[in-house]
Length: 292
Ligand code: AMP
Ligand code: ZN
Ligand code: FE
Ligand code: FE
Image (cartoon, rainbow, N blue to C red; front, side, top):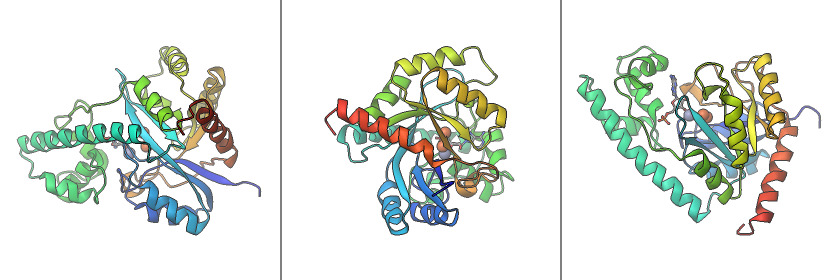
């Protein structure tokens, strides 16, 4: 079949997306996607449900995750595709992240209360729909209560790094994030590399070299917000550092308005052909690491 489309970066209510895993896969069917990676932050709790719905609807669901890694300047996120969601060591590492998140969330509530805002931990948990709790859920409660008029304003005024409600969170080192994904049998792919540095930086290439040496397998070269030029630029860098190209919308449902599944801001197209090299690389890792 020609022109098969996929999306390798999506979120559900198991982290900070607004659709349940089932709803997400049903929505993917309406977009005629043939494969989708569910890449919830720091957790794999949505994967079973997504896989079951994927089987029903004939959509391949790639078991995946998005891990935050320590990076001094901007934001480093590493996607793991084709992970074994039941791997004990990997699940233990995720539990550590989740515990740290809980502590952090309580601290954010205290900070917001200290600023005179009426917000409770229970309200934020309720806003999360039972999955992992993150800053978008704080933003949602602040919006519902009329403290801000958009999610974006909630981040700007209270939740972004440097804002008065911000609390840093525990993250893996880049090495640990990559190792954890490999341990679980997956491939490690650098998400949205433009968030690493606030401005175009001469440090990007050396960092990619370091990450490649640590075993990074791929990089997101197709992304909702990229211009043609950015996409070409990151594709060139991926080639230079022998990183497999990946692509995704980073769909969060109504929590990221304007970013739609599969099509991003309207013109995104992620070809199925990106998937096979990633799958092969994961299989290769498993052969060299026979724990799988
Ligand atoms: P957390 O993992 O709890 O730190 O939350 C991270 C999530 O917050 C990411 O999925 C982002 O989509 C969202 N986020 C981070 N910064 C902003 C921002 N400035 N505006 C809107 N959303 C943001
Ligand atoms: Zn997110
Ligand atoms: Fe991300
Ligand atoms: Fe994401």
